[in-house]
Length: 245
Image 1 (tube, rainbow, N blue to C red):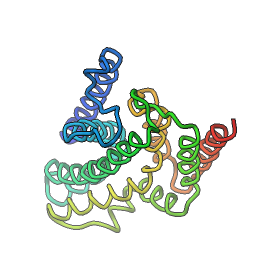
Image 2 (image 1 turned 90 degrees about the vertical axis):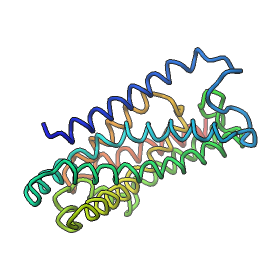
Image 3 (image 1 turned 135 degrees about the vertical axis):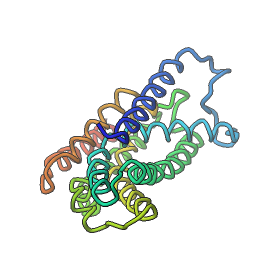
Image 4 (image 1 turned 180 degrees about the horizontal axis):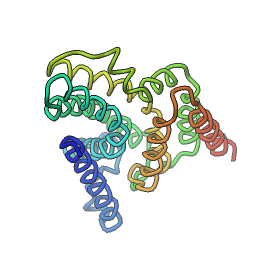
């Protein structure tokens, strides 16, 4: 197994371990000693933002690195052929990819901050407003039918095609390609992360299911749209149920 795979799998397992530990600790925390901010947004301190940002960053690493492994495997193979070594270039590619999700974690942190401000999240980070939750699900489900989603998904399903059309030489090129792939991947999956605000931000079971769905969605043939369409329908129906009942 290539060294880059060992490293990325280790990071992924460590991220999942951290998330599981955090979830297990939450019920044991008293409201006076919570590490997560549960009051109005105005009461958030810098430390609160850092804690929530770290949580989302680790979550993005745990959920999204597995789906990037086929692309990194292909990139590592080509780097071995071109440069005689693949680890350094693959590491740069992987860090660039992950950096996009770390930037996106800033957005998710701000969204959580505002949701607390409007009291749409409970102290345990579950939704408190069925209308908002239903709208989020409808938005996430509807996004599955958009042309932009489909275009990004096609790139994610075709590592060879992406690398063939986007290849740039050198370390800077590895970073540029990794960053571009990260942007495409965010374009493909960002709306699915909104589901976490509905089912509970620290819901490990939901994280596992979303991760498995993303892996399956990206592993299907390039022209296969069953998963994309079916998930869009199911999320939309779930959203309507919350809005109407």
